[in-house]
Image (tube, rainbow, N blue to C red; front, side, top):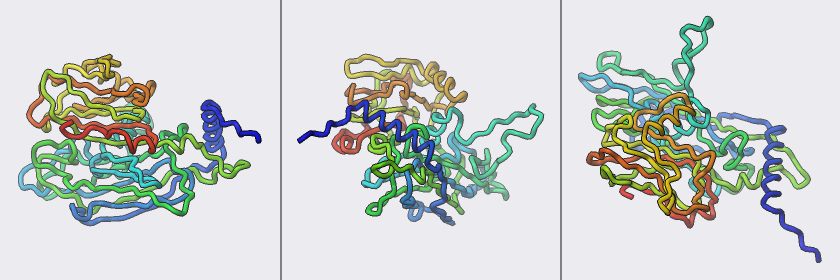
Length: 390
């Protein structure tokens, strides 16, 4: 009896590459509206929306359109748009796959950050070309990324706020790792959206609010969800052509908040085991005060043997971001790009993002957003990502 020879790793990767190329060439790149709803007064009791994606094709991700009305309910002060403004319309986005494995559990602002760095420009933005001889530039001022800079406390005390989010399942069009083959009948996925229960804060930390400076409400929220997927997949001698390595990989977006930081001391934010990290966002937040580098000595990424993979002051780190997207993120936000050489904790083990602060007021925290790949059967037995107080 002749034993069938198992393919080598190189052969598997080549077959995966060929399958992805064939799908891009022959399949239909479809976008379809799969869910719509309106909520007049979203409160803590009815601000969570669950969507069951369409069980069709090889799913790349979801576009989510959200629009609502913010009303200034205070007596004497205007509302002022926060650092992330309409990106905070959704405070939480969670996606569970066909195996009920939680791939995404993150905020609207983290989705905006990821979409920005992967497109190389502020996601949803348009250039304003004041001297250009044609009427091009920022002409669409509603329904894409929009929020008035201020909402008065006077009779004209309302403003329309809108945002579009991209929730990726696959890493990109050209890299299908994370895509989900949905032509199944025995399971369901779930996309869960939480409308921000605290859209306005009168005082204090406004990082997760849409507006600050007064009390306010968010009403008349409409949500439209589009599913982006490869349809009419090519057929081979054994059935549908699929990139088996890519679809057995989880592409994940997760976030957490850590605290217990003291000035002048290294603070370690550990990278979880059995993952391959593509990027990290860190927002240094001194109880609502976020500075342009003056509160940080340095950031570093350090291996367990105290080898610093990088070690930079906040200004050089911010320059790296400018080189990629041509802009700065809101004050206090730092982006660490690992795409060229991912932090592979299967290979390197204990790795950590280190911050050494100059100042750390009471209740200082760091909001951390992770982007990584994993294998579900490994992550379920691995250590979790750090949490508050870690």
